[in-house]
Image (cartoon, rainbow, N blue to C red; front, side):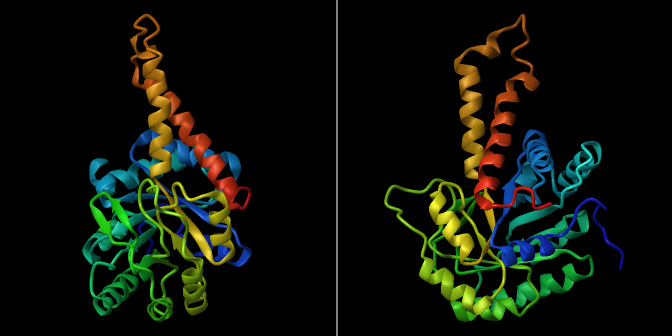
Length: 296
């Protein structure tokens, strides 16, 4: 069966496996609109960084649906002549049906998050997604345990991953595995201190494959690097980009540059430009930590 997705998109399998082998991490960056997508792709090309761009189900609906996202991404890949490896990924797909819908629309990678189901059901549904995804050469991410906090209505209590389950999931044909190791979506609360590296080591020993750190925004740099050394090969970033965009946009407005009618400071291209630059700068800073720059 022929591939649905665009010739410039790749699945995430080879990039995360290469990262796992060489002890660095691929950055997964959630997108929300044109500025987000263009900023990440441009920065990835400039720094020669293999990259995963992703939408949550909520962001995908906000942007108009999976077909709209695929059209936007493919158009930018072509017009900007992006030659570094880029995967378009569904983040926290909550159902088998949504994963299939995104694959058929042209996503090159999907996450099926069955952590809200009993484990046996999660495993069975993950296998169903894998069987479908294989027909289109699409990579699959699964999750065990759960990631703490809330993201686009997906709420997790933060259960630590079970090594036995990790070992079983690793045999299904997934490309990467997300598991709770004390990480949290969104801004980290003041009481939070550290990831559970002991849990990560146990999970990695059982799975022996690329693992995913969700809730990567706000984790101290030394902990990020230690997690990478222990098998984390993909790091998800969303909140950190949103905060950078907010702060740069707020500064522009507080300086009343949007009120410069003569200079057309109200033009969206000018109004959103500082936020766009902040996204590029944040991408460069984080991928520097992750060690993925120059790996394309």
